[in-house]
Image 1 (tube, rainbow, N blue to C red):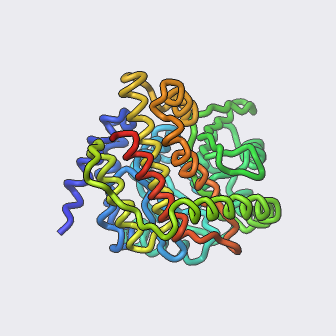
Image 2: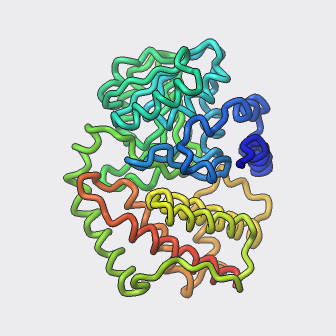
Length: 376
């Protein structure tokens, strides 16, 4: 039987150790809201680990990793009676965390996908939070204009910088907006976590580092992007497929026992492999990217700066510095680049998806070989 309470305490300790949690109120919120109320039993083994977790299996939709939820809660600066607008459901879990801080406030969720909306409503009722959280099944990019009197607006999917500005220009003074934002209309990959505060009619914009979110699900976004992205994503998909087929044809990910890696990395790789066997390929890709990030941070601390503050550091810059001292070199760099390239696949046109099962398997293989070479 899974001891959720013990796993929750371990996760909170881990977030404190990483200096992600530093407000006791936020830590208390994590203790009060049980994750198992918001996720299907099929993924309960993966709860209370610091990684994205799928809350909807068909379609596959992930909830942000716990460290990301903690960062959001610290940055959004909730008041006890805040009126909160959340775009994209995140299973109802994140909304429930916010209601534990804004105890006299209310959260309105805008969710485009009917199936996801129904799952979220069921979770909210199961957790007995329907008096504080409501969900509207509507395109969030269209519906947001009807809720601009909110005190806090939180985007839980990536949006363009131009759309963030469009919303920010219309909100009232005192409003805080938090969103993962990309600048390119073609590649929603290079994302920054942006906070906008409106004071005396002026917009104060701050960046809190690089993030990796899937696109905000919206019919409007799909219409905008699918024409421009299709040719580019098809090309990327073909390049990846060709490289995978030529290099590692039909090979299952193998975890070799002869290489001694840090325990947290080994456990994460085993969990990713388990998710692959359970038919969660998008989740495997997300987890591979998270494992890669944690590995790069570990290498950076060990070889460059043991006191590094990762909240202010860009992953690509850390990789470049590790290349400079040849920790990452010609023998493992290709595996690294290939894993990073799979970021493109997460926001593929849903009407023309790639072979996620194949890409997830080979992405995990590339990650394993990168890590094994680094630590051998």
